[in-house]
Image (tube, rainbow, N blue to C red; front, side):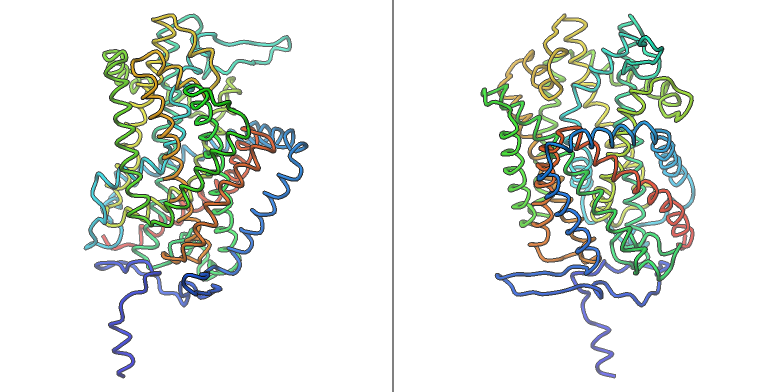
Length: 553
């Protein structure tokens, strides 16, 4: 009897998910977090606490892939190119339809009474302030992409739209214009270009993140299950979720996250290298890019060792301040009135063109639909396990409605303002000022060419390079934290060396893919891992609704 009393008051394990506060529909299961783990702890020598199947299969698979890609790098380039083209050309309708489903489900949950449910129980309160919460949401979600594509995508869409439809001798359309373009119409091309850009960076991608994050948070904080992807599927397959079906789900989540992060690291390193060449004349060679990946990975590993509050949270807040300073500078010294006016006009254009852009069938703009939209949705989906779990970890205490509105709208509004400021300024430089340098530059250098037409070029370009690096560091260390949680069977505080292992291999995979096929290889792996995980997420939507409906309201 004494033993039972002692057990009842024993404090919760630091590896366990916090218990629900208030009445919730907790799922009773015989599974204990870490029961299938291999554990060895000897502080200052070596520590290990890993799920014997998930970690082993994931680690061996990623190590083998890295080795083979490095060993056969000269022959894999065409293979990666064909893989990317095959998936995007044949599955564009699937990716676009799936993203539409995620958006519609999020909107439904906002307006339905289910939105009143609080993550963590009726009495739970948020762990972070709104400012810290927004900073971590934004920095982890898509920081590198905004830096790389902030100028190049609006400007590229404008150029393609202005040129209109182009056909080859066989009657096949070869241009990259969204929809039908706006040939010869500068204002129409600008509106269409910005609408297409916002489409790729606003509600659709954030709805993907929101579905994953909400599912994880509900089943961990309200249902009492481990914070892993397999837990989401308990209402559908019951106790089998702790066996091989669950193992496969978690392994897919790790693969998707690793390749999604590696794609972003490769893109960010290419842009940082181009910026260094632009500022200091350092040649942007493969060796330089690899050196930058190693440096960034080392910083990310150090941030991982510092922990969530001292590492991720601090870097996220610093990065948000730097990004806002750069954004404010561009708005003030750039075409200020055009940016403010454009922000609202771009939102209206986005709403106007949204039905056509989100239509998965019956379109002729195959290059844009397949090469841009399908790739983007696959990339966001490959990021969703890591971003979703990270958002879930920092969102306990929010209601479903508050959570979805914040996750969908706040980053979407900031992304729209960012694209309007950077992309709109670049378009104005080309159209109004007649400056062609930005338009003629490679994608990696277009941000710096745009900044070169404004005052304080050296300072702003240096800030841009720092932002690219720190954005990846925050993504990498939070991603390593998430991967390690999955690979440790749902343990929240697995040994730090394991997180360092995953952070290191994110860098190694990025190097292997760059050597084995460059940007095309990075894109190919993001798409190929995004496809099977899209199927997982569609099934998860059903489980999420079942889980919410079982909660007391």
